[in-house]
Amino acid sequence: MIRYLIKNNFKIMFRNGVNLLIYVIGPILISAVLASAFSSLLESYESAGQFRAGYSIEDDSSMALYIDALKEVAQDNGIYLTEYETGDPQKIIENNDLGGFVKIKGDSYTVYESADSKVEGATLEYLMTAFFNAIISGDTESLKLSISYPEHAPSVNSTDYYGIIYIAYFGWLSIICAAGLLSNEKKNRITERLCVSDLSSLKTYLSRLIPLVTSVLITLSISSFLNVFLLGVHWGNALLSALIVFVSILAASAFGLMLFELTQNMVAATFLSFAVVWTMGFIGGSFETYMLSSHSETLKNLMPIYHENRALVELSGMGHSDYVMSAILYAGVLAVIFSVISVGCAEIKRRKR
Image (cartoon, rainbow, N blue to C red; front, side, top):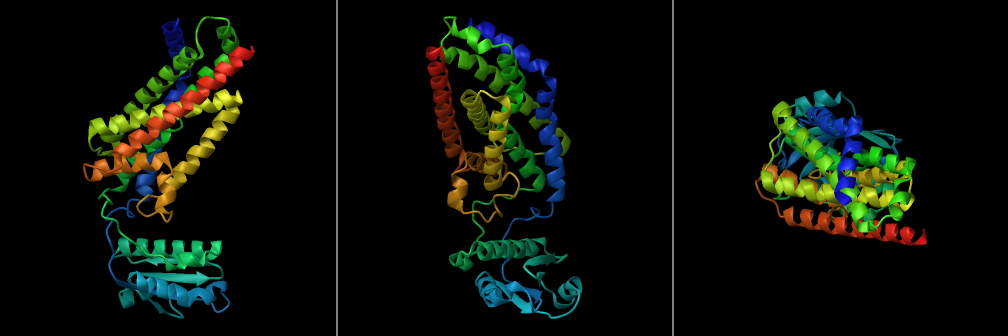
């Protein structure tokens, strides 16, 4: 019986070819766009060392009160700020051999980079972002920040970075591939019919999970191969990377099915899934690279997608990663927890019926 259900669910999922096509084309398109947009940022991820930068600030700016604190924090991190009251920022950079320039106007700022060093410009941008975030939040302790360049940071370009992490990101949105199947079950009241059969809640759950995981795995594998041939993405240890992606897809699929089991509404389950995954991606490096992110390491480590991103990127850039085991275990434990909740809820509903 379960083999028949799995086979039938496969057919239903592949009839909704648009969703599966999204999983093939989506990661490639987004990776290509972001890789091009942020190519200069990851050209050389290394410490900029000490350098000089300029700044200008309007007299009526609300940030004038904090300029001395900014200069002190900058100096603690090897950035020496000098005020220039007038002049074009780019010309000031060129004429004074500066690593960058910050123009503070009102309660906002603009960072100008030196054409000779993108690394110094990125460092200055990071300093200003972290500093302004601390001011806005009122967390004065955060003013004592320190810019560090961890030894684990791999040498990776934007094509490799985004070509890899968007395979991981789409894997966590596996509920998209399940939309046709779950909507069909809801429309035709398949769950109610299965309640009168001798098929257990666990087998019913597996008849959904197995086709979903397999479909996502197939489509993302195709997308990964196309990324390699079309964009030139370099993966690290192929077997370890494949294992990490597989376990994460398993956890993501279990997560999506759990949300559907709890809500019994495809729209609600999809919305919740997108909200949670977007938050994890925002903190875990799916948009802003985790190497340059100002989020605390403690917060990032709470996100399973951060462990996956870091393990995959470090395998690509260095050939090894201390996050391989945590990425696999974290996703594996979540897959078990989500599955237990789904089966438990289904069994409770089954008994009530």
